[in-house]
Image 1 (cartoon, rainbow, N blue to C red):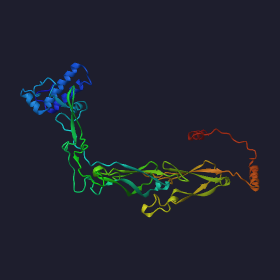
Image 2: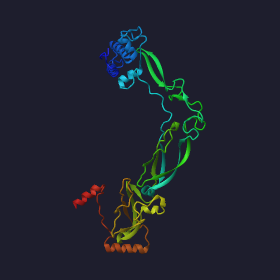
Image 3: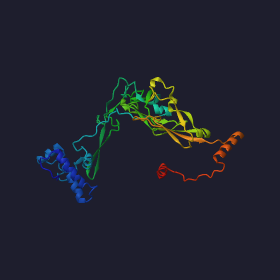
Image 4: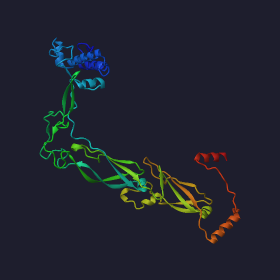
Length: 390
């Protein structure tokens, strides 16, 4: 029936049955003759996979007790797991066991909290105390779930196996499936006297304090992982991890683009024309009162301000790049500070100021300027193209 030698071992028999079951199963080939052939193959496999039935067959006896070796009649039965193994390659079989009881102790879930910090704290790092509300180990039962002085007992329904067999009749014969025991929920044991503090779960919810160190260079969306600081698992199982998700608050002066900082400096018209020097506060100015326990800044030699030189004739939109004054990177290095100049034209002039500007315009011949109309440069590549053309 299976096409194997008489002395074939159990692995060879199982492989032969799987190969034939894939070809002959009614879901694959509904032909009546093929269904009959599938019954014969299943009956043969039931005999040869059972040491007692195989021994009876080798001695010339009837392994089905009168039903006939060629049939699949009364008395024949096989595990539903055998058919599933034939299609999915499992390690079950008529002689194989189930999954067994599941453990009460399992790993806890990961937890997530969100923390808002300033731009300077994100750039240079910060240490924060957090209050978290998670499941912790029950100190009354030490995670066992049973009341002190008691312990779990074996389930009488499944006899500690954690699962029970359910047999159903079908055109294939008796199909046996294994399901978690409803009495013990698959644990294989029952807690007769659950702990009153945790109701048998082995954990309780509690608020606790944690210290989290935020590394320099984090940004909005960055998650800092605290190993085994999450939820304690059921039955006193190991704790999951705690993730602290960072949200960086908006800064009144600087905007962040990656590791670079950008800001705009407004310069009066006369100062832009004549040139001047401005004092620009840097991001270090936000952490002058940084606690000693949090360590020094990335570069303690950098000052909290920078002298920004505005050259004579500076135009609006001119950018100056201050190297290494941006945000430290998580993998090293530091970004730049990009300063854009905005020239401010006065809108309210007194008589004397108007007189002086009119005199300047007369000297420069700008009383009635013709103006220059140029196409708008919509991209950096357009400006580069024009620069090369000139």
